[in-house]
Image 1: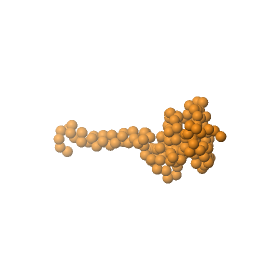
Image 2: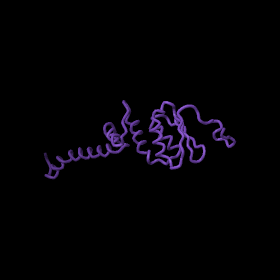
Image 3: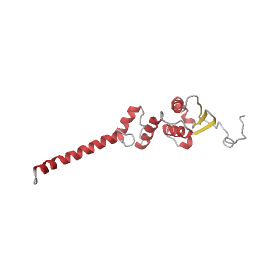
Image 4: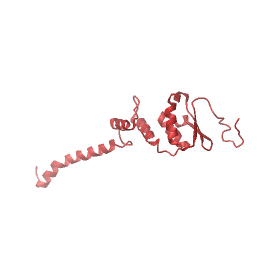
Length: 157
């Protein structure tokens, strides 16, 4: 080793500091839901009581975790409810139909195979809408006539 004593000390310490910096950066990434991967993401799921499905990708699991976090923070709009349910059920947003028939009355239509999750779905929706808003959930058929739904001349039969 050549150089001054300070250079010699720095040459010894610098690689260790680089490793320490990398480790600190990895820990920071591991505790944030948007950057965590693998087991670190699973650990966040344990905190939120949200388990990963078998063979589920990090991206899909991350979306589910973010959805779980958002349950108590969304605005309760039709779009927010649609996103919340599609993320929770892991289906396309187009499969979740949300309509507001009259003020304070929201109808949600979901594919029939999700009826077994009815209590969880109700819990999610009721935590995301304002007090006094009625929510009807339907799992099969069509509750409304899509062609006349938004027509000013349509009436309840």
